Image (cartoon, rainbow, N blue to C red; front, side, top):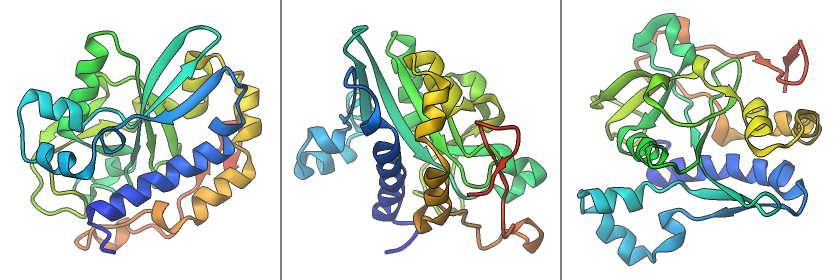
Length: 235
């Protein structure tokens, strides 16, 4: 399976979701439920393929619906959750590349549009080359480092993207604690050392480098900070 293929990228995201489901979402109190809602789950394959060939606003809205939802039965609240894995540094940005992520432009605009009408959309990003690898935030254009860019040479989907400033995102732990009301200590207990080790070991979730990236930018090991201590998470 080619690393640039849609199936590989989809598997990459599913690996992240699977780990979070196993270590976190499935172990929360029954008041919370985390479940898929994206268009891959709502429409049969034939309809998905038809929608991919239509670029009007209705089709784009459906194609880029967030993939998951979380509900809080006790407080009658709900959130969309979209998971993104960004793992190829933009070497053209020099040292700034280590804190810049990449999201498809149409998807990002859809999340921002949903947020503007009052929908709660949580964008959860995993970035293995950033010192805080697991992040979350509500989408807004203040998080954008560089607006829509056309792809000339890429290991990804080849579609236009926006660069987001990872320094402006919160730790996943902080954001989820504040927004869903889950004690931060409980999140740290669930997303424990074993979770970080699994992230580090997973071959789908490792940093990849563009073939043209200079040797000096190809780091063999990137130290992750630990959101639950003052030290760093070795994983």
